[in-house]
Image 1 (cartoon, rainbow, N blue to C red):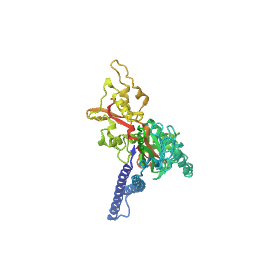
Image 2: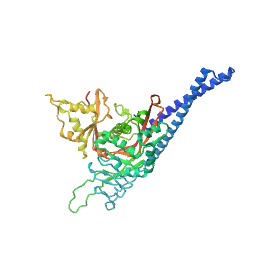
Image 3: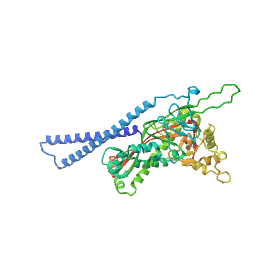
Image 4: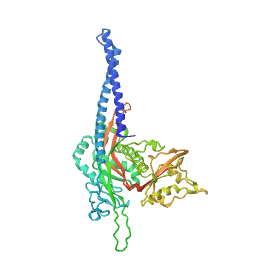
Length: 482
């Protein structure tokens, strides 16, 4: 279950109104009871009235306590909103690169880790060799494939800076489960010590299908982070003898990551957190899986609203802008198959649509990577037979690329077409996921109190950016298996 900041504020304000109503109603009822006693000339409440008065007092105390807690939540949300507003302002500030300078004044390098004159660094345009660099320091900005979160230089430095704080937290609580259990008696939130947050972050990365496909992860040391990119290739040209050498400027600019907040709720009982063997690992797994599914939605569909299609996605800003929304907004020709009634595969040309998608990326001089769809669409293809009852052979390029599935992709109705699904094909290394270094948790006690449980609200903060839109393609509304 995921929340944006706007959703969290709406939920908190609704709970605040409910608590205010209960407090007001209880106090008003108590006043009426006391007035009634005074009117009849008694000095005290009778037995039944005393029980009712005590019940009303308990309701008023609980409502007042909830109001105090909710005010704290709203204050935290307002603080984050103010921080994001300031970041949005900064994100609007542009900085020119030196691409327009005369050739003898440029110091571009795209192969051996030399710093660009504007402070950005970039290594090559080929997906397998691309290396991203922080614009302010020139240091490596991305995790290598298979690299653990804790092994990145920026993450290690963050851990070192917070070592004393983490020492106090780990010494006080002993484990993540005990920290959550301790928070269940308060209305506050807490930063998760780095050694406990690392496994959660890695589990989310391992469970997110888009990250398995090869999305580049960029740790974010600050709320606003810039990395350099090459957005236009050099165009070589032949020359005649004695003529001037044609100039061709590569285009460089910045990718700006602006962290927004995503919350995921995991529910657990207090007894489980206190007594279950391996509670830390189980809680980490649950939070990681919840985060992973929402990260897949953000990467693939972020900011796609119901009006954009019939799948029922409603992922407004401040969700990061995902692949499909970015293509619909800026490169609609790279979104194939968006027919009135979807596309139904034919038995004689079963893989034609997938080949069209794969080669649409390839023909833009990009390297198409894994296909990503839901299970139902993949089943449609692996369960396809020819007229002799033989299973159709998957084309070699599709088989070699690989095919992953995720529940983040819904099936939909498109016109008269039913069980329609989207399939993505990208050079996934050109899709960048920015991730803030810290992680925060808040324990929700009132919502699940009647069943002896607590809600664990974990905040993920980050952004999604696409380095090269030409490296992405989507085929919409292909018929999936029923």
